[in-house]
Length: 377
Image 1 (spheres, rainbow, N blue to C red):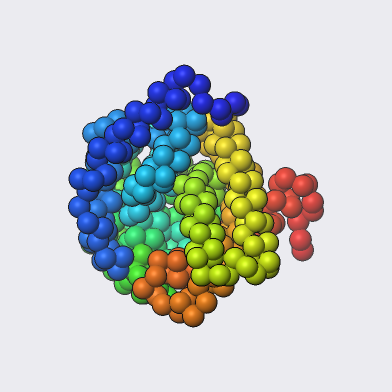
Image 2: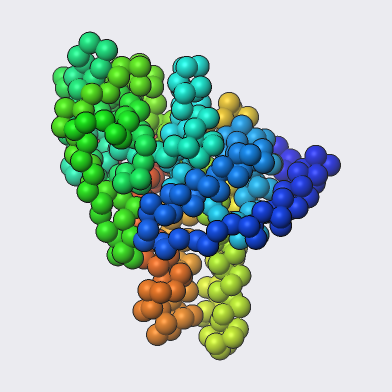
């Protein structure tokens, strides 16, 4: 697909720039990064503005060229990103759009697009992180509901979420992957306990979640019972293939700022630093091209990204860590100041080779499903 701007794309870009120039000065001050209720209100308020202006569906139904233009222009203008709406807009929402019934799409997608409801992700468990199919949270059918008991960890945005995309085991006798079901769980249901987890940077965007006989309507099941692993692969395709698109644009901006900082403080004179910055520039340019390819491929095959997303996720995770390691080198002693955004982002980047599937898992996927190599024993 040709991703060069045509007349329609040029008109979209110009209109978006004009709208951003008008609306961004009217936004309220950004909340404290550690204030997640405040961040939820801020992020949802921004999403509502996008919805009212006709830009809310840019992460889903918009053509790929428009989506990429939107990400470029909003990042260039310093607009907010999805924030607390990350799971709903980029994981759960696209999964429901691809796999849900008409009634489920009508119920859950509009509130996500309007910024009315926030989702969290309940996939990983204390004993089932990289081995996600080893999850033990069980769901027993009781009439028109599943009774769910177990625990989850690294539950993104759980403390401010309205809904959870939840993986449960509905057949304890089935071989790992075959007994899993994908549910949408209301976070205000009785029996849910959320305990926020504090990161190195002091934030609490993750949480432990304990489920004690939580009743989830059968109508909240996306896909068939025990077919949840296939549905999960759709979710992970979005998470790995397109969910990080905006962050590539942000990293390119940070890289430009980092080069400017190096010129000001003299570290630019170090040929090793210049070489690292040059290599990172080439790396992120290549990742942006891969992003364009992945988004275009997803559009061509009905909206679900392919396994090429694992290539992107693997390389992007490491490139992001290298970017902020280089930032620490440029900052020198200031790299210890957690009040600086780059330093907080450096701590956050440590999780990227684990989140959404570890780098080891991504290498296995690339080896087996793209290169055709045999599975390890």
